[in-house]
Length: 132
Image 1 (tube, rainbow, N blue to C red):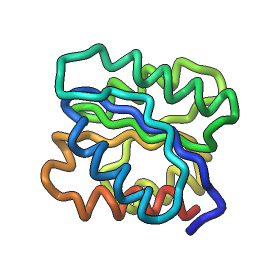
Image 2 (cartoon, rainbow, N blue to C red):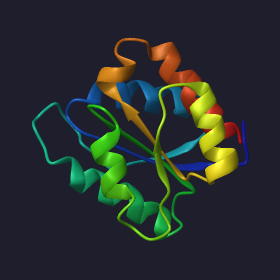
Image 3 (cartoon, one colour):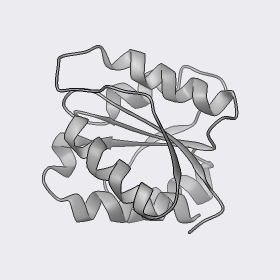
C-alpha cells in the first residue's frame, strides 16, 4: 500500500455501481474511505458530489479523491473549479501514472461508460494512481 491512507470518493448515479466496486476494493487494501455520495441510482446533479470530494481534500480530511461520472469529464471540471484541486480523467494506468508524477494530480476521475464492465481495469488505474 502507498503512503496515502485517506481517500474521498464520489459518483453520479451512472457511476454508482463502479463506485461500490472501488470502495470494496480499497477497503480490502486497508484505505480509509469517505463516501461523499451518491448513495443510490436515483438521478442526481454530479456537481454536488464533485464539490464534496474537493472539499474533503481541501480540508485535509482526505489526501486524494476519486470521482466517477459518465465520462469523467463533468466531475473533473467541477472539482477543478476549486483552487488546490488537480483532477484528471484517466482511462489507463499510464495516464494515471503521468497524472500523478508530472501533474501532481490529487483527484482521479473515472468514466463509468468508458471503463464499462472492466472492473479489473478500474482497479489497475486506481492502484497506479495511489501508488505514486
